Image (cartoon, rainbow, N blue to C red; front, side):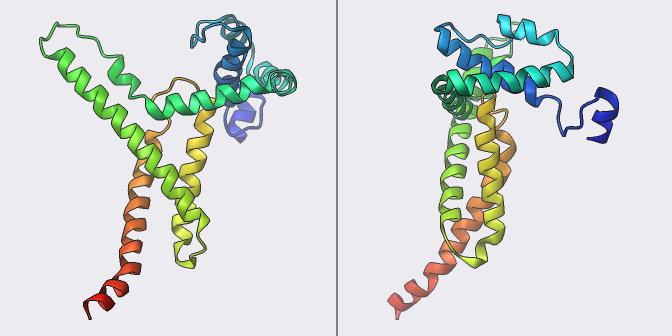
Length: 203
């Protein structure tokens, strides 16, 4: 933050927050309002915003958010949930962006397979992470403090991803390892809790 303040004149943890809001969530909400198609990086708002300095971007983004909350809050909420849905249900943009430059005969088949794998893993890990995290946070088990921290991290990363549009699994894939740890711990803990019950049945 000190280095950013020294270089750009803004004391902040990140310089992309304003751009992300304005070019994605804010622009999508504006597109919904005006009934026009949202095209990532290809619209008048993006062209205008790209010419501003970092400090100007911060100021413009904050003012835009205020105005959208005042006069376009329904479309802002709609855009946010639209982003969450797309980011949770689409596959890797890297797979979709591959081109068959040397005309390999099996390229299309392999691309389809990896698209399906990528999309399936995104839906599975995102849904599993969110559902198990909510279950753990609703319980009052003292032994689950570590799991609660992991759950909060997963939910934070999930909900913050709604600020950005059309990212596929790019923003969610970072918490997939946490989901694996969470599910392993969660189901292991449930097995331990149910063992005494099965032991009684056997007796």
